[in-house]
Image (cartoon, rainbow, N blue to C red; front, side, top):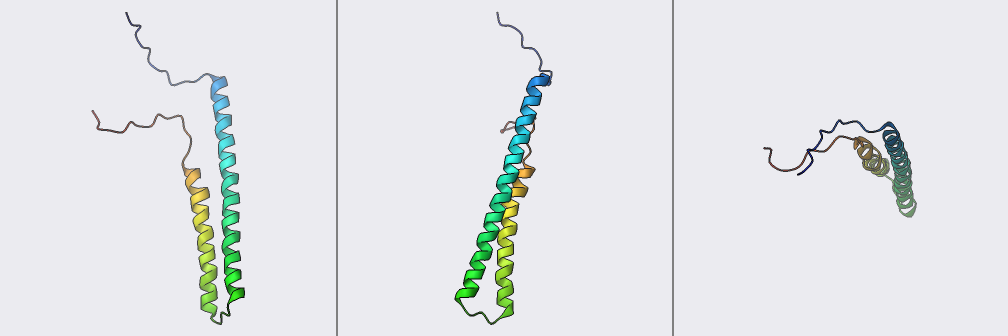
Length: 104
């Protein structure tokens, strides 16, 4: 005979829950620092590229210089979005994700 399954109570033991929450906090801190460093690197490279183009060529137009600087700011903003905003919105929860497929 098989043993009847017990319903899940949804509670974890306190020691396990605290350990898991500490791990989640550590992962978020690592993701935050990784994002900050990645954004800093992308912004530095973008502005160095703009400075290299400006130094290698003679740009008389102020509009073109502003466009190059704007492109560098855009690169920095996109890096911030992809490395900081998106990972921060993907929260680690204990909720069970829904199963794919047709609903019964």
